[in-house]
Image 1 (cartoon, rainbow, N blue to C red):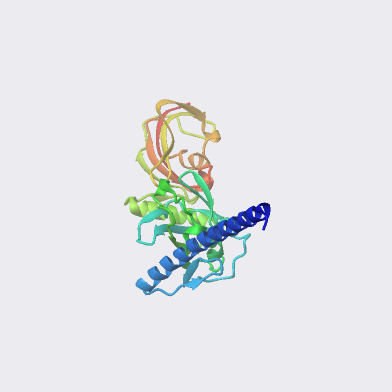
Image 2: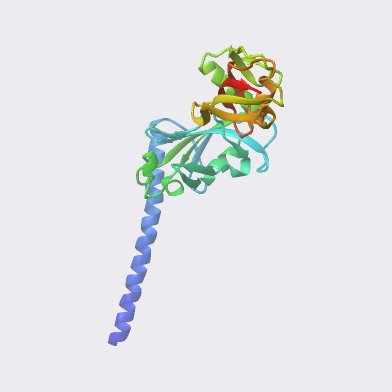
Length: 288
């Protein structure tokens, strides 16, 4: 065998071994993931179905109604956990996510976008009101690098509790969120026919009645239902014509408060100009 041919054969052998090693390493990650998941399931006496792509799922409650299509709007919940039960990320009944079923695999976690296809596939197996648990192997989740922003280590398998709310419309979800908010905070708000809720802390002592054409000076703080301040002005400088402000303000302020008045106002999303309900503290400084 000449020297050149021998070198070429050795190079080919090295390349083949390198490819085999890479393939073996990739398969070993899947194998390690699967062994850890099966050990977890056996230790917790749980019976899950394995999908052909490697994730495991268990339908806890099928839900009711018609089968859902990717183009249907859904409101859903999720809780991401490690297999040891450590909670990584979860939704709240005060801020329920909603989108088309076909987009339920998209997440923003730790200011980074992720796509978890198994979540959409499992939610697609449910009807409204349904619940399921999903285990995503690391190679379909955060991978070898993990994700330190939420304390996910290398090759961590992720358990996800999933649910679809029975409600199909934004105003129905608003009612659920506001009811939860009111109960959690032991509030007794008056509910207007518009669905705005309020409590008058002080009606005020001004003589000028508020109308849609009134120019009002107000101090206010706007919060999401979880208490996060999203906007405020409390130095007595915010001035506007009422007809240009939130629809909920236009419906509630006239006839209920005047200069010096204070109220708490909780608005569903369509009356708060956004995608979610808002909780306002409002003080009327002056009315023109």
